[in-house]
Each structure stands twice: as C-alpha cells, then as structure tokens.
Image 1: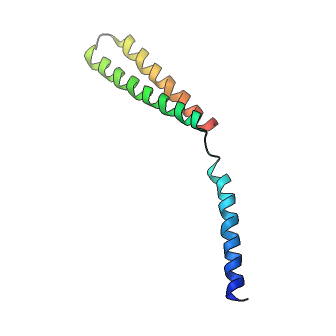
Image 2: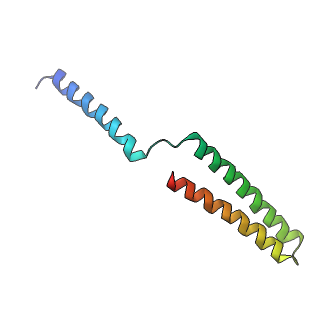
Length: 86
C-alpha cells in the first residue's frame, strides 16, 4: 500500500465515524425543550431558595415550608423528565 491509499482510508474512516458519533451523542435537542428546561430549572432554584428562607424565617410554619419545597421538587422532576424524554 502506498501512503496516499492509507491517507484516503483514514479520511474515510474519520468521516464515517463523525457521522456515526452523532447517533451516539444523541440527537440535538430542540430549542423549545431546552428553553423550557432552563426556565423550570430557574424556577426550581428560586423555589428552593424561598423554601430555605421560609424554614429559617418562620420556623413554626412547617406547612408553608413543605408546600414550597415540594412544589420546587415537583418542578425539578418535570425538568428531569424533559431532559431524558426529549
């Protein structure tokens, strides 16, 4: 084999591996799903911060703390499902 033939085979292998690696990494996510995940994640962080503040500011009001905390967790679960489903 000559060097030119070897280089051509290597180029073809690299080109085919680039095409195949697209499937291994998964398809590119749509901008709508990505934007929804970002919004849900931001609202989750705000909800978690609010729950921590409520925990220390109103220690006698545990129902409000649990409501805000579990609401924030529900948003995070929805974001988690969107991450793996789409």
